[in-house]
Image 1 (cartoon, one colour):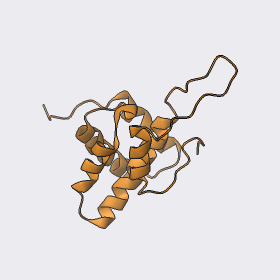
Image 2 (spheres, helix red, strand yellow):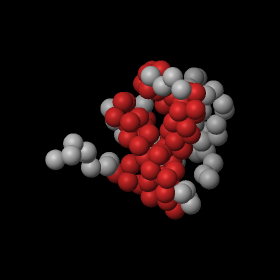
Image 3 (tube, rainbow, N blue to C red):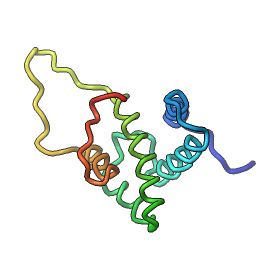
Length: 125
């Protein structure tokens, strides 16, 4: 037994997404290695449970700026992909839904993965 776990549904779907979006095989392999490390570090593939502290903890162990940037790109792609799959609450009264007063843990971790850049997760690319 090699010690490798079977990929989670999120990993399989994300890998397929990368291939369909035209990423080169080397990029797909690199992103998937990074994603597996990240998901192993945070202990879940349920992105709504991934908070800023877990994300910061992952990046704190990466000292090389180039590696950090590469990992950031892979994780940002994963979080964008996963965010598009999270169900959206629709208010049944016809009135507008109240916005949260501050970003959730997941939103903060997404922002951190983008190195503080404001990222629009509502649009699909």
